[in-house]
Amino acid sequence: MNYSLDTLLYGMQFRRLMEKEMQPLETEYGLYKIDVQILLYLKHAGAHNTSKDIMRLNMFTRGHISQSLSRLQKKGYVRMEQDLEDRRCTHNYLTENASDAISKIERISKKIKEIVLEGVTEEEQQVLATVAQKMTRNIEKVL
Image (cartoon, rainbow, N blue to C red; front, side, top):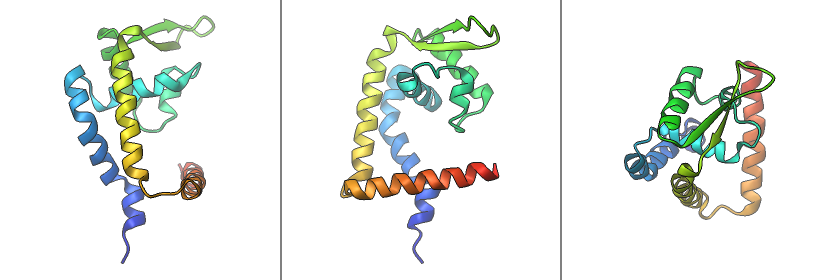
């Protein structure tokens, strides 16, 4: 029996690879795994930078996001600003202090992507992306 699809769907090997590659950075900067993911998300979030926006990733709970943002703020990596229209909402912005860590996170992410996609053609990557989007929509319908 071929377990390749199950391995891909459950993502355990990918998670282990990410942990192996990111661990030195997490130690160097005193970051948790969620901190790294939130920093990377905020780097590309634009105006979608609230806790609610981060929750839409469906990777973390509200409590974990809140704790991580507080940690990142204490480290000086994130600045929080209250929304002018909805005082319950805060926007999260990366500070200049985060730039070194972000650069290293992006380098490691690029390396991981290269490892995972080695030998996979551009056409195969496009097919994989299309299939992944369809599978995500199927799961979202049920959840």
